Length: 97
Image (cartoon, rainbow, N blue to C red; front, side, top):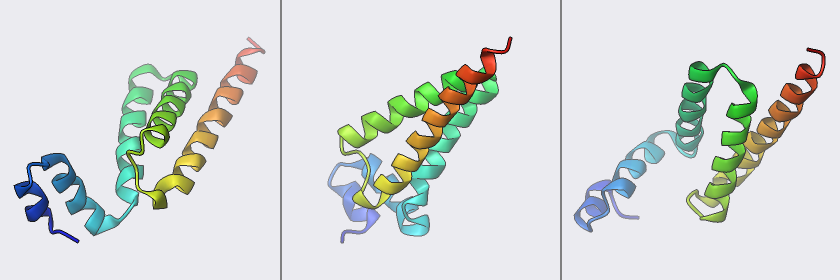
């Protein structure tokens, strides 16, 4: 396995940066990055359905484009399941209004 510096010298700075963090905290780096994006959207809009829709879109795109390592697929499906549950909750909670 190449060090992040060797990856940087090959002309791939994004993977070099990602490798530094994945070496430190493993696949939880991806959980943290996705969570930061989704939390920023939630704090801005305070709308769970928008957050869940973006979570499903991000999860589907990352799984279809092979942007994540194989070890992360279980956590990705968990996040997408929570996003579907969020959409169902927002639909059911808005029916009473």
